[in-house]
Image (cartoon, rainbow, N blue to C red):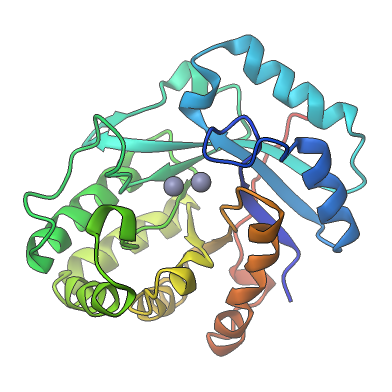
Length: 256
Ligand SMILES: [Zn+2]
Ligand SMILES: [Zn+2]
């Protein structure tokens, strides 16, 4: 049903399993019939070292993949017009995934109150606008997805809180941003985390993305083999929303 996965971490990301290598990922994805994938570790995993970036790219080449393997990076908005990655660093990658809501990381502007869905809504749309406006962004990942680690709710409460938050997002403001994303050819990530975190309020959001002709990026955000498999959790959503190849985002350049 889908043959790409553009959000995959390797052992270089501290949060990933330590034997989750580029070789292992490529081998697994080739066996499972994927046609195009992207390796996307956190920007801070490289500690601003160009050599580490270049050697990761070299590992992809050395693996001699029989499928398209792109080399991207996961970054975050710290605040409006402030990204964690700088333009020079970003230029070493094929594409930049921009997270508007990495509230667990130091330096990322947080909502004024994480207990008030209206406050969270205001902040989420503000950071989403910031990610869309940044010239570094190629795709916005997990927007409006609330992480249980940050919000500390049970799955049921988090689902209700997420819905309440989404209801408080000003519709016109959101549509305006989606139209900008569409014009710029930015992707918006469709992630199996919406199932894992019980975030069904995002289904309507994806529907809106499709209506506004925004391309969706398929990304597992895998940190281990099991999470690569979890990508199939979004198959029913892809089917229900009628998502086809023409709705999907792909990196448009590869230097590999
Ligand atoms: Zn993330
Ligand atoms: Zn990630």
